[in-house]
Structure formats: C-alpha cells, structure tokens
Amino acid sequence: MSNPNRPERRTFAIISHPDAGKTTLTEKLLLFGGAIHLAGEVKARGANRRARSDWMKIEQQRGISVTSSVMTFERGGVTFNLLDTPGHEDFSEDTYRTLTAVDSAVMVIDAARGIEAQTRKLFEVCRLRSVPIITFVNKVDREGREPFALLDEIADALALDVAPMSWPVGMGGTFEGIYDLARDRLHRPAADATGAFEGDSVQLSGLDDAKLEPLVSADGLAHLREEAELAMAGYASFDEAAYRHGDLTPVYFGSALKDFGVEQLIDALAQFAPSPRPQPAEPREVDPDEDQVAGFIFKVQANMNPQHRDRVAFMRMCSGKFRRGMKLAQVGTGKTIAVHSPILFFAQNRELADEAFPGDIIGIPNHGTLRVGDTLTEGEALRFTGLPNFAPEILRRIRLADPTKTKQLRNALNDMAEEGIMQVFHPSIGSQWIVGVVGQLQLDVLISRLQAEYKVDASFEPSPWETARWISADDPKALDEFVGLHRGAMAEDRDGAPVFMAKDGWEINYIAGRHPAVRFTATKDRR
Ligand code: G4P
Image (tube, helix red, strand yellow):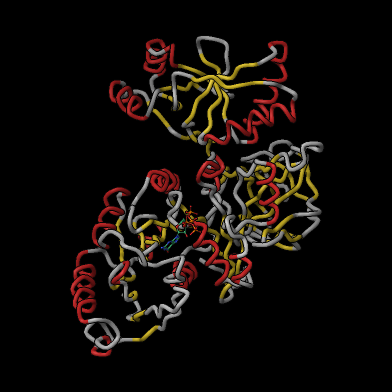
C-alpha cells in the first residue's frame, strides 16, 4: 500500500516481441509524462527511433548497447520509473533480470500478431515473481485479429484471466474509436491530414445511450454493442486483487503510433499498478516504509571506459530514503561504499540524484566492487533473494588462440560471470569451457571485451547443446544415477552445481519425463 510519507512510485517494464511497438509506446509515455518536451525531439531522430538517453547513444557507438536503461517521468503527482528491457539482438540475461527490479509490467501485443515468442519468455519471468501485468493491444489503427481471438489467445497461451477494459470500434480502415468499458466513455479519433488522432472523448451513460448514435456509424455501433456485451458477459470483470497477484490482466486496446489509448494506459498504471511492495530477503522481508536504506544490484554496466574499467551498478531502492553522499555497506564483504555521485536517469540526460525513494533506481559508479545480486544496506546483514541466473539459450565452446593464456581466460570468464552477463560451465568430459548466454549479441560483446580488457584472443565453436537446466533431487542416489547415465551432457556451473545440457527444450521435457525424481530448473538463485 502506498504511504503518504513516501512519494508515489510506479516502477515497471514493458515486455513485448520485437516490432510490437515498445519503442513507440515508450516515446509516447515519456511525451505524455512531459519527459520529452517536444515531439520534434523524438521525430528528429529519424532512422534512430529509439528513445534512449545520451548515455545509451554512447553505448551504441561502442557497440555494446546491451543494457537496460531507466526512464523516469511524472504525471499527476506519481513518478513512473520505466526500466527498458532490451529486445531484438540486445536480448540478454539483463533483460530477464530487469524484471526482478520492477513492481509491474505492461505487455504490448501487436493486434495482428498476438502473443509472440519473446513476449511469452518475458511473461514467464514475470510469472516467476507474480509480477502484475497490464496488457496493451497495439496497432488497432491497422487491420488486426478479432478482439475476441486476441483475448482468448492471451488467456490460453499465458493461462491468465483477461478483463477487457476497453473495446475497439472496428479496426484498421473501419476503426472509429475505443469504448472505455469501465468509465463508459467513447474516445474518438479525428484523423487530420497528418494522420494523427486528436480525437475527443464523450461521457456516456452506457452502451445503450442514444448519444452514441451520431458518434459512430450504424454498423460500427451495432458491432460495438453486440461485442462489448458479449465480452462483458464472457470475460472476467476487473478484480484488483487478482491483477496484483498476477492472475488476471486488464486489457486495453490502442495505437501507440496514433496516441490512442496511451493516456488510459498511464491512468491504469497510476490507479492499479502497485507501488513498491515488501521485498523478499533473508533473514527477513524488507518493507518499503522502513527508515533505513536497503536495495539490491540488478545489473552492472561495465566497460563505459575500457581504460578505467569503470562500472555503473544499478540499484533498486527497496526501503528508506537515500541521500547523496550516504555510506552504504555491501553485505557479505563488509565493504562500505560512499555514494557521492549517484545517477538518476531521465529520458534525455543523466542527472545527479540528491535523494531517492523505494522504487527508484540509482546508478552507482564503482570500479568493479559491486556485483549483480549484491545487497546494499546502512549496515544490517540482509540479503535480497529472487535474483536468479537464467538458463542459457545459447551454448558455445570457447577456444583460445594462444593456449598459454588459460589463466587469463579463466579470470576473465569468472569476472564476467560475476557481473551476470553470461554463465560459464565446465563439462564433465573434455576441457573446453562452455559459455552460456540468452542472446546472440552477448557472444560478440564477450569476445570484444576479452580482447580489450583482458588481452585474450578467443573465438567460439559450436557446441552440441543449446540450452541447460540445473538439476537436483531429494534422493542423492537418483541424482547420481542420472549424472552417470548422462555424463556426456553434464557440466558444473561456477559454484559446482550440476547442470544438464540439451539440444532444446523438447529434449529436456523428454528426459525430464523419464526421470521424475530429478528436478530440472531454468533459474538458480545467485549466491
Ligand atoms: P519495438 O520497439 O517493439 O520493436 O517496435 P517499434 O516501436 O519500433 O515499432 C515497430 C514498427 O511498428 C514501427 O514501424 C512503428 O512505427 C510501428 N508501430 C508502432 N506502433 C504502431 C501503431 O500503433 N500503429 C501502427 N500502424 N504502427 C505502429 P516501422 O515501419 O518499423 O518504423 P517507422 O519507419 O514507421 O518508424
């Protein structure tokens, strides 16, 4: 629950498949929130449509744009922290891990394509932590699938209850607006010469209101009445508790490109999305209203300047009020870090943060001291949990050009695995290390960092496997027997935990089905 002594925060991420419209929606959210003051600034970017901070541009020039940025905007007294989840070729373990630092998510779906592969993967990570999800069906200004088909697909594919909050009056060429089912308002486009919708919004007393008649075509109205009634009868009605549990998703229809439904989406985030909640930690849960600062590092941006090996650790604030210059203890190592120049991210530039509150993200420059998974407190020995490693989706053997550099390679891989950008496995048979990542670009970044930072020339070779699972069993005999049977596909991770490697998810399911006493897990808590 929100607390009057703590500023309102909504810390969220957008999950989607490439091209569904995440960038466009991000820009529009920032525009509505006043973070980008002139639409021209966005348009001026031309080919580079991405709403990135200046810093991100630098990263792009260096070709290491593999990180999530943080964008902050305000509206109606609420501060929204939008954590970018890199998609496309930038897809990495960071993308997944960003979702451990948010309180809710917006799922953007292309109305013509429905649920796609990457949306599903990201959704599964949200589900692990019961992150509540608001769905935005984008591109209703174009021909899309029937709303019923889309809603059923969301419900079936993700095993979620769906509650339509609005209903499109036609789509594509027949699009005439969106009916807000909860508030009984009709939002109408007024397509002008530029194609932008600067429509009006009319308050009605219900779908039977005669005022609707002159506002939409007879056909459109007949369809709307019939469909909306069927929808309200056929789908769950919005239930805030179920949404907050991650069991139900409210669904909004709109068009990010044409500014349609974006405002309703922001209103929904402000009204329903949770403000920071208690966070699981050991030995006790941490409540956002506690006085003392506590937070965790969910990502580390390395190599901003290869000469200095400087890094920025992104900390999610979980409790207390942070002030610049504060000393924070890195739990576990006993080190104290004076945070003199923390960074808060606004859309266009980075700004020095003077204070930060639960739900905020601060960037802490450091020289490699801070690692993903670290807990920072004012002194209490706490450890936030639930920041897992994720099973890799690409496995490669790594080959050294110069075999005398084995030690350097080992150190480099160890460092980078600690940063959380990749994982390294030692196969039971053979001596070549295996590197695991979730996105292709990570492999290129790895090779160039090995060279630039560790002076190690290495390349990748295909491995017979693409994915891996951590395995465990209550009965040690069952585990030993499994390992014995599959020695050729076994490896150990950095902590010595057993890992089973496989060609694909299908093989894992097949093998798991034959070994019911063995657990196969796609995530493992970081130590
Ligand atoms: P992404 O970040 O999820 O990958 O998607 P992005 O916003 O880049 O959008 C992908 C394409 O879809 C872009 O077109 C964008 O203009 C378009 N798009 C986004 N939202 C809407 C919408 O509501 N309606 C319609 N009709 N299109 C939408 P593009 O052709 O790839 O780029 P551009 O040349 O138009 O900039």
